[in-house]
Amino acid sequence: MELYVFMFMLAALVSSENKVVHKDFYLTGCSDTEKEYMYGMDGEELVHADFIKGVGVITQPDFSDPLGYPGLYEQGLSDMQVCKANLAVSIKAYKNPQEKTDRPQTSIYAEEDVQLNVENTLICHVTGFFPPPVRVSWTKNNEALKEDSLSQYRPNDDGTYNIFSSLPFTPEEGDIYSCTVNHVALDEPQTKTWEVDVAVPGVGPAVFCGVGLSLGLLGVAAGTFFLIKGNNCN
Image (tube, rainbow, N blue to C red):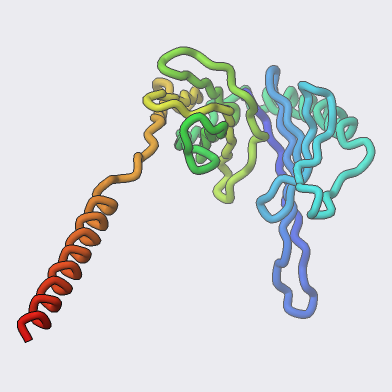
């Protein structure tokens, strides 16, 4: 059992209509190599603990009146101890059974409209997998790159997970990038490629406009010539 995850879903109800208006989720995950503590609402992450940097992270933009609280990171550390204790008990009790697995689906795209020599970000989105973790790696023209950042694991409604890896880059014509995903449900790594291909504006419309304008001017000139000749004949 490489990653053992608890997820609690809380719903806020409108008492008069008995309808769910908001849905909170709280995710704690751990293994010998993985740690995750995250809280969110309505499918959006609000805060998480960064166990590499040793800080609590508020992921909402400033204009949204972001939610945060003192001791966020310390709460995450405490929950990791509880998670590992529960993991040890579960492995012993269930004799580490084979887990059900779901294969990831991967897509790669640019964050902004692509312009040559203008900084941008490539996003590798991996979704539909179970259980965590996945490993994501990048290449440029078949040379290995270091990933810039990897998001928290986020739950999907069907019990699977999704995650994003981002890579800053400056587009240059002909460059080929790839995102490779490794997961326990895959027989071999899953790779998606993305090529810098910026369309050059076509010259066809400009040519047709130029020809049309020239013919129009020629017609006006011819008409004026015959009009003057006609008046001279009179």
